Length: 306
Image 1 (cartoon, one colour):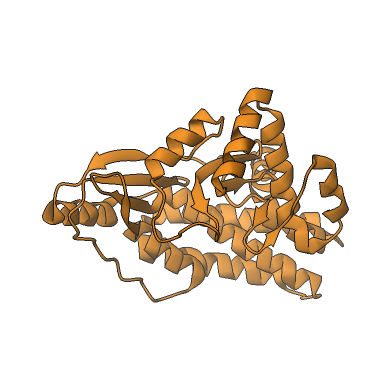
Image 2 (cartoon, helix red, strand yellow):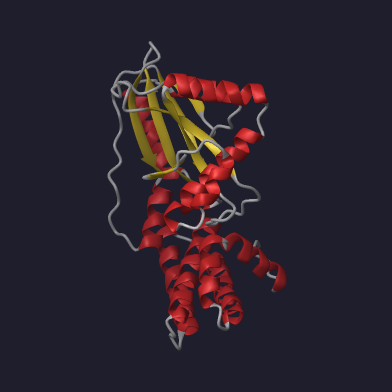
C-alpha cells in the first residue's frame, strides 16, 4: 500500500504505527490507514473475495485518495478512496492495457466505490474532432477528460487525456506559466470511448480561492522568516493576481472586485491569527484551507456568494 515511490508491505493494520514517525512514509501511512478502514467496513465475504482476486490475478488496484487532512480548495467531510482502475504487475505482459469498463464493474462487485464515467459510441474522426473541439472551447468547471478507446473485441487500443481551455488558462493564471500544451485528437477507427470526468468547483470560485490560498501561504512563509511587511506585500500580490485572472478569464469587474476584497480580508484574518504561530498557520493553510476559509466566513460574517 502506498503512493508513487513509497509503499508499505503490511499484514495487519497495527503495523502502520511503526512507520508514522518517519516523514518519508507520511503519504503511505495515510493511504494504508484509509485502505484498512475500507477493508474493515466490508463484509467478511466481500473482503475475502477482493483479497483473493488481487492475490490470484497479480493485479494492483489504483485509487484517488481524498483526504480531510490535506485539503486544497473543496471542503471534504471525510476521507475516502475512489477506484480508478486495475494495473498489471511486472510479472504479467504489460503490452495489453486492461479494459476499463470491465475493471469498474468488477471493482463495484467487489465493494469498491469508483470514479464517475460514461460510455458512448465513436462516430468517426470528423464528428469526434468537432465534439472534442466543442468540449475544449466551451467547458468550464472541469479540468478535462480521459478517453479510453476500446475496439469491438473489448481490447483497449488507445488512451487520450484532454484538457479544457478553461483549465489551461486558469492553470496559467495560477502558476505564471505561459506555455499552453498542444491538444491533439485521435483519428483511429474504434467502437467505444469512455469519458471519465474530473469534477472541480464552479470555475471562478475555484480559481479565486486557489489564488487567495497561494498568496496567503506565501505571506505565512515570509512571516516565519521575519519579513516585516508580509501582510502589505500579500495585499498587493492578491490585487495583482486578480487583475491577471480577470484578464485571462474575461471576467466582470464586479465579480473580480468581490473576491479580491475577500482575499484582502482573509489575509488580515490569518495575519491576526499568527502572532508567533506563523509556521503552524502555514501548515494549516496548506492542509486545511477549506476549514480555515469556513472559519473566516463564519467569524467575520462574510457573504461569499452574491
